Image (cartoon, rainbow, N blue to C red; front, side, top):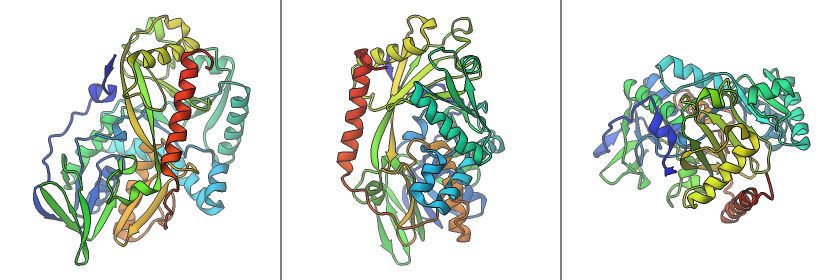
Length: 426
């Protein structure tokens, strides 16, 4: 089993050959981080006629934008009523309404720019793994339906036909959602950014930000960009001391394991409409199939640095529980990405300093949230209008005891997976 990202290898969109930043440049806006948020911001700015320079530390994509599961989900991680409790009624319903339409924004962007990312729009499935999970799905379904969302609770035969396992009796189908190859989606937006006239630089890590008159100077190893406004779109990959975003989330990980392609005569009844799915376990398991029929399983926690035998044992355990009809599966590759978590599971949109915008805390919903936030940032920067953002721009307090949060999460994930491997848990 190779340590490599399946999405990088199978992306229909090729990696762009882009220059590193050299010398002194100027722009109206500098965007740091060419993941989905940064690219969406740059694209919408360029389309509005604003000059923008986007710098990326590695290639595109090099962070979570290309390493995630590829689920185009609506909303946030927690259900709508919980969002209102966390954010207040007004802001909560604003976030619910805007992020409810986020999958449509993603699919419209794909269509408008002809992005080849193996997108499907058959929905996603949230799977109840036990009776408590069934109650949770009923609660979520009621809240979504009260807000007019096209969701449906599937039971027994209807559920089994969609998922391909009799271990699940109830699933919540969200018809707003879908799947895609996240690497291809990110590369496709990057292609559109270049076509729109923005300056895009790779292999150009930001080394720091400093005031220069009424503007900000962002330095890289070989050059600099001066602009009145800066967007920090580094999210879960914000590690440098100068980057204030790192104070407003605690990092977690998500690993995935992919099989070799499976023939339809063997696996054709497993997620036959290619919905992405995840279960209601405390430490969830995700599952989907790609365009070539591979089964892709994932879960919270680190996979990088783990013994291959550990990853194979975990994948075998989940596969044999849900899809025993496959027999022994050949696991082809594994990879790990980072997630920016927040204690209340909601995002942060804030200004660390005048003229600097930042976003973080997507809590595993980066494809849709990043796309919408980028579009909203562009409108805010060009029209001083934040109405397209899921939340108003406001001050954000640093998260206390960040290392403790991360240690508790990762420790819990590891123990849970060990229990699954030892057949104590499933």
